[in-house]
Structure formats: C-alpha cells, structure tokens
Length: 266
Image (tube, rainbow, N blue to C red; front, side, top):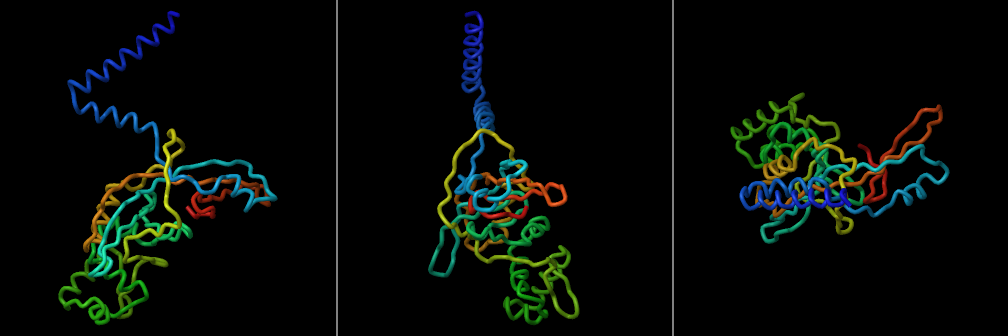
C-alpha cells in the first residue's frame, strides 16, 4: 500500500510540475512535446513480412540471425509546374543516409550524384549543366546550344561546376565527374501504391547523415523553377537484415526492403 501511495504521489508531482511549466514557461510545452515524441518513430508500413521474404527467397536455408533496422527518409509533399499549362502535385522520398532521391518505390531505383551535389552546394544552374552532360561528353558549343546560354554566362557556369568537381574538361569536351550518374529533371517519386504509416516505439534506427532541413534546402535549390514544398516529415523504412552461413564457414548478410520485398544494396 505504501509503495502504491508513493507511486501515485510521484505521478501527481510530475503532472503538477508539467502543468506549472506549461502555464508559467510557455517554451517548456514544446520541449515536453519533443520529449514525448522522441519515444516513438513513424515508419512506412511494410507490405512484405520477414516470413514472406524468407519463404520466397530462402526456402532451403535458415538464417543464423534476423534483424529489423529502420533507415531514415525525408518525405516531401510538393507541387511543381510540369508544363506551362499543368501543375503536378506529388511526393518525394529522399534517403537521409545518402541524400539520393528514390525514383520508383516498386523497383527502388534511385538517383546517383545528388549526394555530391548537396555537399558542393549545387544550385539549379549546376543541375542544368549536369543534366545536359548526363548522356555523355559535350563540347562547350553544344552545351551552349542545348541550354541556350550566352558564351560568357556559360563560361562562368562551367568554371563553377569544374571548381566543385562536378564536371571535368578532358580532350576538348566536358563530362560528368561521377561513375554511372543518374539525375532527374522531375521532382517526383513514383509510388507503386499509396504509402501508409504507423507509430512504433523507438527501435534500432540508423542515424541520419543528412538532416531533413538540408534535404529541403537542396531540393529548393535544384528544382527551383515553380517548385514548392507543401509539407515534409521524417519517416523510417524497415529493412530486414538476414545473416546466413557461407560456404566456407563465413557469415554473409543481405538486406531486404520491406516495402517492395526485394534485396536492397546499402
């Protein structure tokens, strides 16, 4: 009985203290909300269970261990001018681990090169150069024709991109300084099906390499023309980590996307 009364008194004091802070120190309300919210994370609800993935891909082998890890993504609800007569509303799913944009949730195809662009503080003009060179090397004259730029303006842009190590000048042509670059001109993640979410208690989350605010600022910079972010939030994608016994006794680990059921390279 004494222990019960003690617990009740502690709870009452905590509630009373929280109420006093809320009434007499307004900033404390936001702090309390943050503390409460930090005990939960919002995840993209899996479409494939661990059992389904094991049944489909590993019928003959039993894993040494299984684990679920939660990888951070930034989900942006946006609108942009697709044509002079049409506005499109869509979503963008950005990895907060490598700053690449997921282009299609069914295949999980992503961009390649946005991470370096973010680190070099690229803008819309840099991206126009990179997209022009994505198909292969071009001469300065061909870049000027494709982008309809004056010689002096183009010279400054090319000089800036070279200084940022985004492009190189080799054998009288400019080329992209990435292996297998893949950029997109449209700020869209094609959703194979609508995403649903649920709250869970804090789990084994992978730490962000990039903040949601950094991704928002980068998206604003590179999709500048008639681009608008309506809302944004951080969500987590459950990834199944499966460890198996290798042929020579070594352990191998593979990673499986819970949203599309496919193996994913991390």
